[in-house]
Length: 399
Image (cartoon, rainbow, N blue to C red; front, side):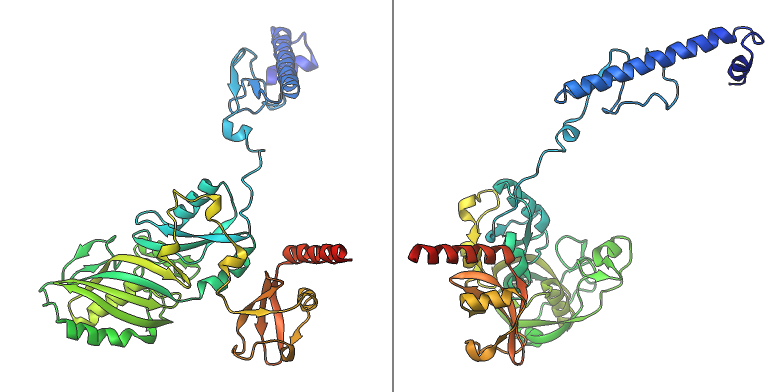
C-alpha cells in the first residue's frame, strides 16, 4: 500500500510502481465489466438467476476490495430453489370453520396440525386443546373466523380413557420417562381401596402439574426447565374433575374413564393416586374420546381428510350457548352498542356468560351477559357486512 501511495505522488520515484498500478487498474476495470454483465444478465433474464462467482446468488460489489477476475470466471452458480421461490404466495387461509381429527399416538399436536394443513393445502389453522405425543384421541382444528371462538371451544369438559400402571414410577409421570419400581415393593391394593381413594379426586381439587409439562414457570415452559435439570414443580392450580369411573383392573394395570375440565393433567391424577395408595403409579396410555360436544365417532384420520370434511362455522358452533337477535340488533352490536336484556331470551343464562350471537341463521360474533345488558365482545365484521349486503339484495328482489 505504501508503495502504491508513493507511486501516486511520484510515479517515477518507485521502480515497478507504474506496472503495479497499471495491473491493479486493469483488474478493477475487468471486475467492473464482469459485475455489469452479471447485473444485465439478471435484469434481462429474471427467471434464470445466474451470476459469475457469486457463491449463493449474491453479486459481489466491486468496491469491497480487489477481486481477481479469473477467480470464478465462467463459473455459473444457481440461486437455491427456496430463495428463488420465496416471492411466491403461501397457501390460502382456511375458510371459517373447523374439522375433528383423530390424533394418533406418537406425533405432537403441532405436527398433526401441520399435516392437516399440508393435506388440505390451507394455512392459518389452530387447535383447541393440546395432546401429549404419547396420547391419542379427538383433536378439534379450527381456521378462519372460528379462531375468534377458540376460547369457547376449549373450556368444555373432556373425556379420557387412561391406563395407569400401579407399582411403577416415572420421572415424566408417563411411559416416556425412565421407569423404576419402588424398593421394597408395596403390594397392589384391592379395587375397593383404589375406588375409595379415587373419590377424593372428584370435584374441584388443587393439582400440581407435572414438571415435564407446557405450563409456564417464570416465563419459560416447565419441560424446558426440567430438561436442564431443574425439577422444581410448577405451582398448584384449581381444576375440575366431573367423574372418575373404574373400567377394569388386571393385576397392576388399571383402566379409568375420566371426565374433567380444561387444564387437568391425567398424569398428575395417576401420580397422586399412587402416592395415596403407597405403591406409586404412572400413566402408561391415554386416549381422549370426547372434547366438548365432539366425540371419536366424528373424527377423521389426518392423512385421509379432504375439503369435504371441513365443517362450516355454523355447524361447528351449533351446540354452543347462543342468543338470537334480529338484523337491526345485530347492527347495533356490531357498532359496539349494548342491548337491553328485556328484548332478548336469555333468562336461563347466568351473568357474565359468553354467548354466540346468531342472526338470520348465521353466526355474527360473541357477546357477554352483564347485569342489565348484552355487550359485544368479539364481532365478525366481514361476515356482518356480507350479511347486510345479502339482506339488501333480498329487499331489492322483493321490491
